[in-house]
Length: 110
Image (cartoon, rainbow, N blue to C red):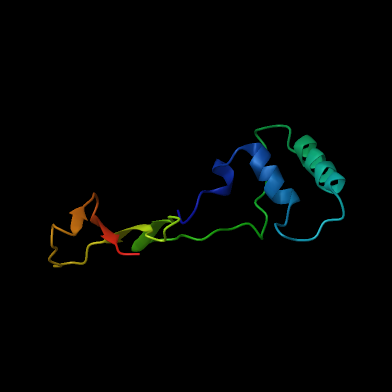
């Protein structure tokens, strides 16, 4: 599964996804509420699946590296990078720390 299945979400979230084409303009909140109410009534029987809208989807993101950065007022910021260890890569344990599942973490200079 590339992303969380539409039908594994709570039913209220499914109807909200059907009501809202995210980031599209809408004239008023009332329009959203009315459409949502209609769908909740239409699919009040939990045995009737709510159809997934064609525009609903997602992406699978597989990181190989990410960084946490915490700014300091003196600009001597904290930076910690987590990355996947490359096959056959030798590490210096003074700098590189072993995590789990093939990940390592290191402190970077600001």
